[in-house]
Length: 161
Image (cartoon, rainbow, N blue to C red; front, side):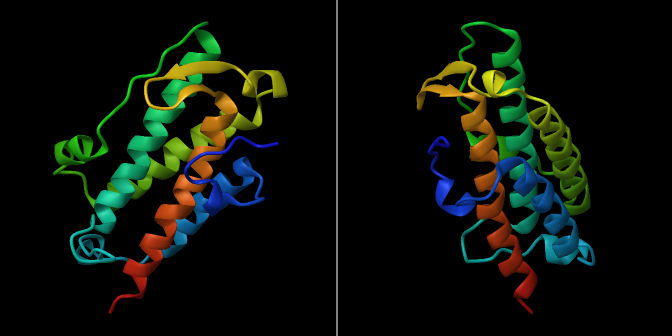
């Protein structure tokens, strides 16, 4: 039984590593012809811009990929929380294209790691202050569903004229 995360409804029955690889391709396809102005649009009033969503996706890949690597290499690893809004506030100079490139590079790096893990390695636990005991597999599933959640928002930005 796959782990349940807050993004499981987006992933459904999809295999998570394959979904991550497809999500990277979708981000590239969606944003391929975007102008700098398009990256500054939001899918709804008061929500992050496409650039901020893409930056957040890169942040999440960085943070959760780090957590997985730490859990795999550090017995008893305890993850730290991070404030996604505070992280976004630090990223005022990254362009939309740079955010796409960062996300896709980090997601591909993580997917390569996840593909090579054994079932035993995916069951390696860590503690998290909000979620309690989680596993590397929980991270794999969360990342894939999280990407799909935000891809839906990016698709809305792409559809706005």
